[in-house]
Amino acid sequence: MKKKNEIKKFTKHLTEVIKSKRQKISILKLNSMKKKNEPVAWVTAYDLPFAYVAERAGADMILVGDSGGMVQLGYETTNPVTMDEMIILASSARRGAPNTFLIGDMPQGSYEPSERDAVINALRFIKEAGCDAVKCEGGKRVTKQIRAMVDGGILVMGHLGLTPQSTPSFGGYRVQGKTIKSYDQTFQDALELQKAGVFAILLEAMPSESAGQIAKQLDIPVYGIGAGGMVDGQLVINHDLMGFYQPFRPWFAKCYVPEVAQEFADYIASLDDHRKIGREHRRDGLLVLAEMAVIKYIEDVKNKTFPRDDYSYPIKDEELERIKKSEFWLE
Ligand code: KIV
Image (cartoon, rainbow, N blue to C red; front, side):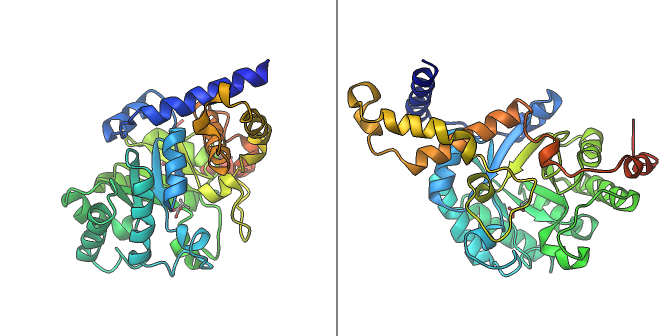
């Protein structure tokens, strides 16, 4: 009985999604969600099929990350990916998700050299790829460029914590915000970004408590990837959510395919019965599996059941006690 009901629910969802035209989320809405403690659930996508899936599943936002350089284009790090390549990935994602707030990730070299470079390249994301906003890595060192973009009318998201474009200067992929020095630095950078006018900040790879403290003290939304459940929303890399990328899988990233595999198998088995399910679903396959996985992820984020401790970076009690003595920690 449960099976039948679930299938019915999913088919109803598909029909509703096909009929409805979604409204893009606004900055006003993001701010009000922070105030109401309603988590934002977003994913990366780098091409039409997955952006399409993300939009149908109801993701609040999509990031065309420079991680696409790795998971989509096959580079070993994010550093080689170029603006031209990012524009191709972002335009493809835009065509797949015309009604979702889309953020283009500024690749290394596209914003650091000068304010002029930053504005020109951010505008390429907006004008050529149809993005709604851009994201760039770094704190104080890039506030001049961020101010220039914001003054140019561009919505900019900041990115702190582990910033993959500068992994060599961190000594590799290292968790941030575990020591008082690293917490203070991240907190001060976050304040600088807020002053410079970013509409939100993404924190990557930090213990929940440090990231949550920053989210609590800032007026703008602070989201996390690998930063625990005390922030204002969650991002996950699409290829981690699907279990699609083998070379590197951060342990905070949860693959949702196992959780929906049975539901998918039941749904596919039910497709034989065209009279009940409708002929338009006859050729449903991987797209539906991917959509079920994204829907489950979104549900978990909204219900605050993802991430829990098993997908967050731990911090030892004595380390946390030391950080709590920071002048930037409010109880
Ligand atoms: O490129 C990307 O997808 C990102 C995330 C890792 C945060 O910036």
